[in-house]
Length: 120
Image 1 (tube, helix red, strand yellow):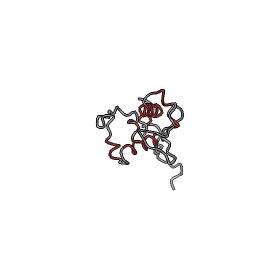
Image 2 (cartoon, rainbow, N blue to C red; image 1 turned 90 degrees about the vertical axis):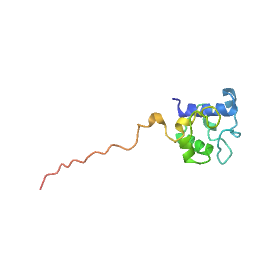
Image 3 (cartoon, rainbow, N blue to C red; image 1 turned 120 degrees about the horizontal axis):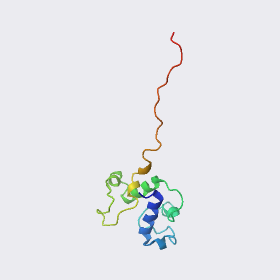
């Protein structure tokens, strides 16, 4: 499985047409996704495969793609057959979680407190 950063780079290559054009992208003409309030593509600063993007950013793009419908994002299929487009590199991260890190972190285990006091 590719990393979130690699997924974003692949997404950008699909958007501009070739890996050679990604470097020259100005971030203002994203064909495949949403933009911030300044009109810059959300993935612009990660397009060259540098940085550490949040999977929440990928989730934001997927919501944009599916018209802000959480249900449509959940039902989205990886291979793109429903759209006629090539498979989307962002698909594994569409729910805003990294499947490779699913078992890492979270809440600490609950432990029982043992009293060391004396019985009265």
